[in-house]
Amino acid sequence: MTRVPTTDTEQKVLFAFAPAESQPDGIPTLVFLMTQKARDYMINGLSHDFDLTKIGIPLKVIIGPCHDHASGLAQLEKANGGPLARGFRDARGVSMEINPDAKPDQ
Image 1 (cartoon, rainbow, N blue to C red):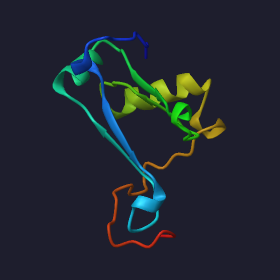
Image 2: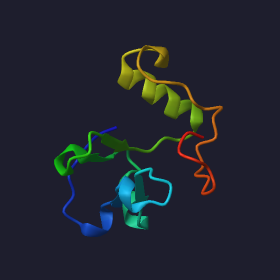
Image 3: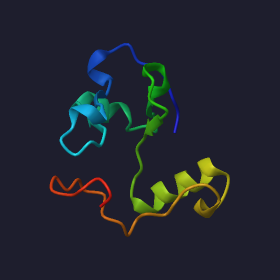
Image 4: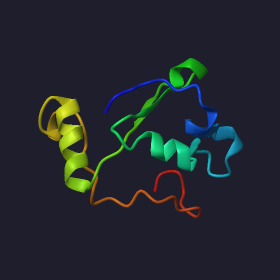
């Protein structure tokens, strides 16, 4: 993935952060929305990135394209310098959908 800054607002990903105290379950929530132009921007391997440390959140986010699951996994392994076991947790079998009824420890 390659980062090339864009000045076209329509090519940028929108995001919103809701802090824990504003959420009924007490868990901070980060929302990303992509325009069609923002998705098209990634077609040739470009990525979107966010350094949320600039707003006091200790998190950096990179969003990039991949052709399919296998090629995406290969990109992650390449970025990590080898097998994902070295630095990433393989959570492909874990449901990551938001459950609005779950307690914070679920």
